[in-house]
Image 1 (cartoon, helix red, strand yellow):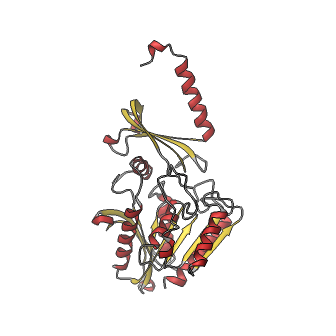
Image 2 (tube, one colour):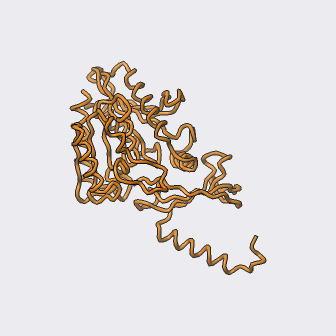
Image 3 (cartoon, each protein chain N blue to C red):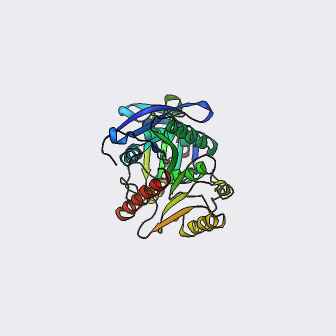
Amino acid sequence: MCTYTTETARMNGSAKGPGGAWFHVTDATVYYDHPVHAMADHTLNIDLADPEKGPGARVALELTAASARDLVTAIEAALAAVPEDMLT
Amino acid sequence: MSDTLSAATVMITGADGAEIEAYLARPEGEQDAAARGGVVVIHHMPGYDRATKEMVRRFAELGYDAVCPNLYHREAPGAAPDDAAATARAQGGVPDERLVGDVAGAAAYLRGLDTSNGKVGVIGHCSGGRQAVLAACHLDLQTAVDCYGAFVTGTPPPERAITNLVDQLPNLKAPLLGLFGNEDVHPSPEEVDELEEILKSQGATYELHRYDDAGHGFFAVDRPSYRVAAANDGWERISEFFGNHLS
């Protein structure tokens, strides 16, 4: 089904997006819903965007639920391996 | 039916008097100059996309003037459909009241065409299915088609930014066609049972069809959910239903 729950978070970082250009990312939207490209009924979709630059300023991910959980694990592992005084 | 048609992007007046983009498809040719019904196509949450526009053209091929308003035009005019959908989602999606206003505008547009016989139906898939029922509960429409719309009945989880339509169904006057997959979980067969009980109790004119070996999204030709048998039969049901109520 089309789902409606959407998580949002403010971001501080950069993404390489349309046309291969880097842009500053200010917002993340996360939701589990129908993908546009991935071959699955539903995926965990992540949009990293700068809304002020318009709808096209977006890097989009569509991951299976299992892949999304693996990504979370990888992210947490990468951060856990960093000395505390390096984390900003 | 005719294989001669025209299709183009037009502007229509939607909710709150806003000018919004829409995709219009119309039969062409002398044999199609007679008065005919109109169909409002409500796109699903992923957006005003190629697959939806193909459906709009199919309704023209079936003999109807058909229009699909871009429900995300206000948030992302001119954007790619997936970018527009993402932008609209990040901003909270399409409010029910605005959807009703946009469908009202689309219906008025169709009735204003020189080929209109005054009759308009609405069809939607997935989130659009729920919205088709919603529109039919509020507007003068001659028929509505709900293709596997979740949360017409049933209880959305509390954190969902949506309500079911149970308290609005008493206002449904148009005949309703519902098409559902028995493997779908939203709406589940039990939720479709609930819809049928409500429609029966209020003496509504309706037809519900349920397909084995089909789940959610079985009409979507570009998704793994596509089920050719269910989709083929479903299109025949839609064609017959519109033929009965929009002529």
